[in-house]
Image 1 (cartoon, helix red, strand yellow):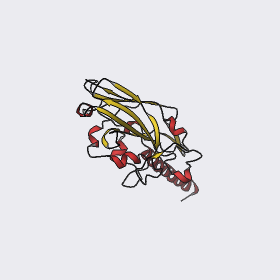
Image 2 (cartoon, rainbow, N blue to C red):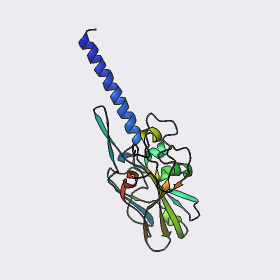
Image 3 (cartoon, one colour):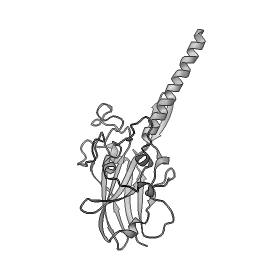
Image 4 (cartoon, one colour):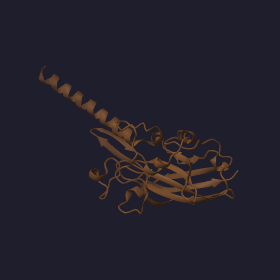
Amino acid sequence: MNEDGKNMQKRRGLLVVALIALSWLAGCAGGPEQATGPKPGARSGTRFELSLQPGPEYAKDMKVFLFKYTVWPQVAVWLEKPDGSFVDTLYVTELAVTRDYRAAPKEGRPEALPVWSALKRAGVDGVSSPTTVGSTVAYGNDLAARLPAGSYIVKLETNRSYDWNSTYTKDNAGVNGQPSLIYAAELTIGGAADEASFVPVGTGSVDGSDGTMRPGLEGIDTALQLFASMKVAYIPE
């Protein structure tokens, strides 16, 4: 083979490597097309409404060789009783359910949403349906109409890949960067309409080794800017 042929073969090999790397990284990160939640349906009947407005760190542009792609957060939202006992999942991004991450272990990426992953129950598929890119509101299923009246805690866990900072670096935090953030909001169900904003209450395991929430936000910065506004509402029929 002459020199030109060898160079062309080399360039083709590099292109194949680049395409494989891009496919793997994009698959691990997820995107807005993969966001799933309670079936939108008509805005009627007793329901939960979840509103998440993207913030300045919502998306991150990445580059592999000459290829560019964007990563977005993974999100899970669930309901708890005041004593902390799990009730049901309200919203979750699709990859957390399917675990269909490319070039990842069969268990997926537990470090993305470790607290929710430890709490999830059967029936998660029943709360998911695709949302459109840029959609920020999910309309709940019939769970709100079936719950006994009273106070409940809505928890939200979110994480975006490659969210590194000086505390959580590539060397000590891997693909994840900063750990998942846990938010909480209190809602009164069974009476008049109620709305609450989520407030951060802790973090998940940076490597997904357990489902324990760590209180406090030490070492966290840009992860707090994934969303500009995070609200949940109870809407009676």
